Length: 142
Image (cartoon, rainbow, N blue to C red; front, side):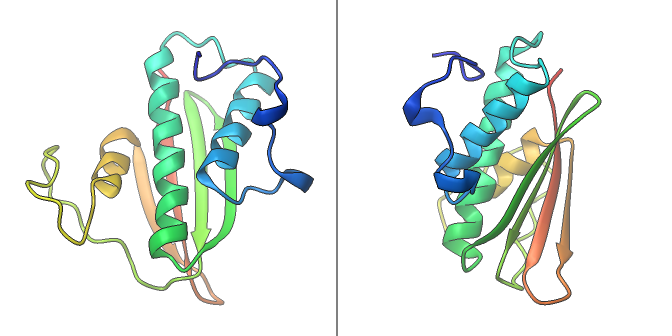
């Protein structure tokens, strides 16, 4: 299946009320967003795959390492998509080395954060006033 397939299917709709509660529902939300804004057939289908991978990793990290997903937003922007994922944890992600190399071994930090850093055009981590943090990224689609 094309990752940006706009064909409606019962199993590809977000959960009741449109809430994003998992990596799967977040990916479906982003696919729907791309379809709404006519970006599903973009010039680089690999960029859509990269976008969906970043969505999956951000949401999974919020659920597994951030004490749960507190918010998810995806917004089309010139040349890509902006994502904002909020979790309940004040713990910041580990810094990633300045190279494009993946970690040599799988330690306490996995491969998701380095993939996010590599695939996103920009990444910021902002503490939230009431606790938790928001990770904002821009993923290019060109």
